[in-house]
Amino acid sequence: MYRHHWKRHEQRSRHPFGGHGYGGHHRGGPGRGGRIGRILEHGDLRFVILALLKEKPSHGYELIRALEERTGGAYRPSPGVIYPTLSLLEDEGFVRQTGGDGGRKAYEITPEGDKALEQNRAAVDAVFARLDEAGEQSPRSSPRVARAMQNLGVALKLRLQGERPTEAQIDAIAAAIDEAAAKIERV
Image: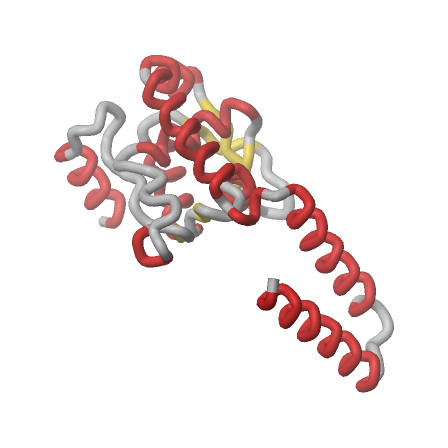
């Protein structure tokens, strides 16, 4: 029933590759200061997924992560958008499931999907240009800031795994994070 709704939506679309692409987080869009604007239009997500799967077979969360990284955090589609799109592409014969890791379904592009992707190469290039522009405009696109954020995450993970820290250690960790947040807010 859910897929039937998608099929009706697809038939009404004017986009050359069908309609889809709504949903996901739109950091920096109209509700958040308008720095970036709309990143994906109707049908664009399908192109993006096919292009990413052409590079390497992936599961849904890898696709989400790849889009978030490419846009510097400006766009992060939700699983509720990625997985139905993958199902639709599979129904159309553009992708197929391949061996996954950890019980997750991985997908790869089919020859039919590759053909559809190449027939719409100009549109695909335009979508990726918008994604790259969003990444350049994103404040998270600074490599130094990204490295520092990763360092904090790794330090926390290493410190908190294994033996449970004492209450004093937990208080010190929380105070250090709060102090860092306060300094960042003043910058």
